[in-house]
Length: 258
View 1 (cartoon, rainbow, N blue to C red):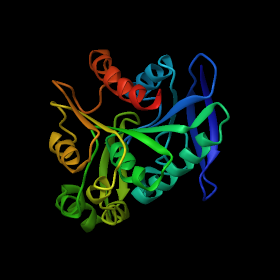
View 2 (view 1 turned 180 degrees about the horizontal axis):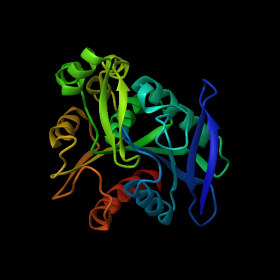
View 3 (view 1 turned 30 degrees about the vertical axis):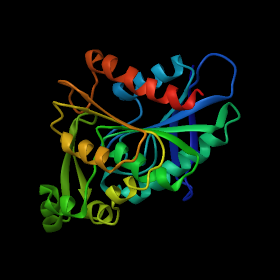
């Protein structure tokens, strides 16, 4: 069963999500799924993961951050990593208030920028018991400054990103990159003390596999790095998500179904 819900962040802004509820008697363990930079909650790699989690007795909650791509507030031009972190906390707070959820069994999964978000967020919230980073970005300040988009945006005040879902180019303000410089995710990863799975495809041309190898090196045990042969950055096709989803679901079952 999938239920559409509307909730608000601390600034009173509207966020929209989907709850995939398992069969059986509640309360259920819960996993919050975070989309990537230009993502939205209905993308196939997120939808298929949510359904697989629900089939295995874990409630899945995927929502749109405020980027103007999905149903939530905001515009892509105005996104900021810091605001995404606040929206993620609002999502955790919202799902923790649901009576059908086991408040002692929360997990986070995030794809691409969403992977960076969950790795950055998890050490600050004791409610989170397990993480899955799916082809996540781990950017240092030096990495951000070396990005082609950084130089472009510094000069013009914005940079361009193409959205396949919107079928058009999007302008993102330089403030996004300046804000990103304020967050050292590598240092946050060193503080993670909960089981963490990292999944990355060998054919990812958007986020190099080196990001995940670095994150894995910085993590404490228990941890696992699953490198998926031939998989791209976004696994929309069944031949990819049917290989990846069981790895992710088994990780959450191992630590949330005890």
